[in-house]
Image (cartoon, rainbow, N blue to C red; front, top):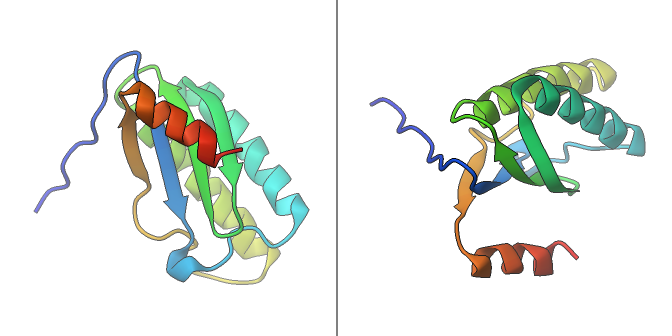
Length: 122
């Protein structure tokens, strides 16, 4: 069965979550986070995604983004995943997946949801 397309609404922010596989850490050292953010910056610029906020937890990440097109977020996350997984696997002499399936994307289409994000990201 084909995957359903992700929801996209022009001008509407998206809450993105990507989790580490089996809840395993995706950042082992501070330098990992710095490298990840560098890759995020490159991918967001290239694929036209505005990043308003982010949280890098030990085993998952959150973003609040506004993509310019329906394809922007997917392309950014694909590019980011490829670069960071290669970096992480090379650095820690490992193979295989780092992320648990596809990233989750939810439209931030109400003030209540936006305010809830602000509260939990403090």
